[in-house]
Image 1: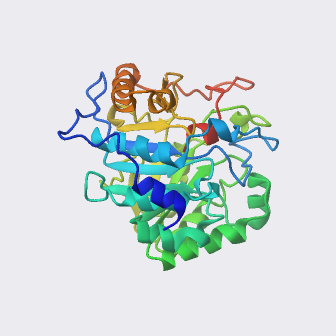
Image 2 (image 1 turned 90 degrees about the vertical axis):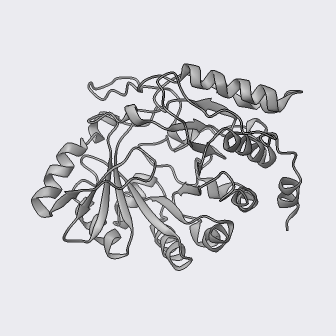
Length: 351
């Protein structure tokens, strides 16, 4: 066991109490059971719809330590969170991230039902076996295209081969893979059927996502906005799409594709609001809890963790978060030149 892993094992678990703590229920009666926990804002890609090429990342001193991330996750588990997704930036660029997965994996079946992550796949080949050993059973991999030139154009990096190797390694390790693809007008829209066919042929699910107006990027985001109603209509001309009641605990709505034998999801923050059933909250790598991806409301959990009474102050902070969680987000993609809905980038918030 590495030194960081030993430190995590020996932590005083601030969320562990002799009696169960109260569940996280917001002002609209929604029970929060799903935490998306960012471990870094850094990424080894520079996807054009996500961040500028010359991205300024946070000073490392502002980012939560592995021990603090562990304590925080335990606090959420004690309040009824049953699913934790580790996010970024790119979570696998974080040093010793495997130790965090191994330590949190000990709570699977002991309050935690699922531990997973979202990754760009560039470093997945190096981590797939360890993730499986830690208890991870499925991963989401962001992949918008199978065309090397377009991949390099969108991500500003020549890394498609690494991503495909990572996906193959995850499959070989026994991890289920879901491909997340942002649908981009004028970029990958004509290639989406090929991407779906390839993924289903490999035994992977696919989820398509509408581009979200978070953070300043180079270029006009509206130029790339592609409503998924349009995409679905085009796919329905090619294939038989059957409604599915499948759910993975997130906002995707699914169909089964008869001809490919695979499942296809749609995440539609613009065309079909999904907030009524929201069960999610996000915590950034600096410990800022955002009750809504599309809202500015936040609660500082880092201050609670670093206080003289972390257990009590964390509990109070989580209660405040439930009180301020909005009913719905207000993403708009209706006019050219509009400022982003929020100044913070997706890589800072956590996917």
